Image (tube, rainbow, N blue to C red; front, side, top):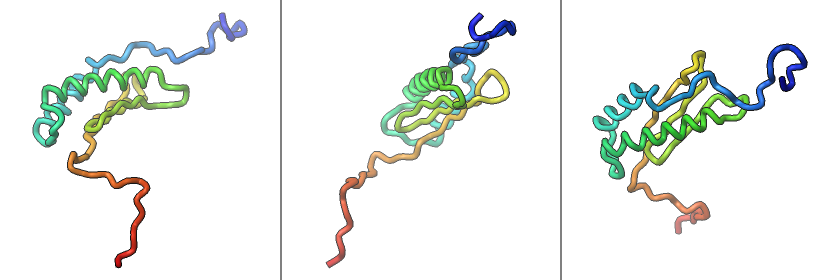
Length: 121
């Protein structure tokens, strides 16, 4: 018994969860995101089939971030240029899931950070 001082329990040395979180637990959320992507999102980088593969990969990353989050933190996040996935600790063992589409344009040019405004002549 570590750290229990004879009380019949152990103080946690790391985060341990009763059940493993899997991508399959979020099939419904992934399917809804793929349907929305196919209907409403225009993306030059990904077809709907490629999008589903990317979302599943990001979900795996979000799960890893969620399961390895430091004490006191409630979220696991994974993102790329088009999608953000957030898993949040809730009242049940299954985390809450949010899948967001990031608004961006391949035609938007960033202004250099060092550019300064010049007064009009």
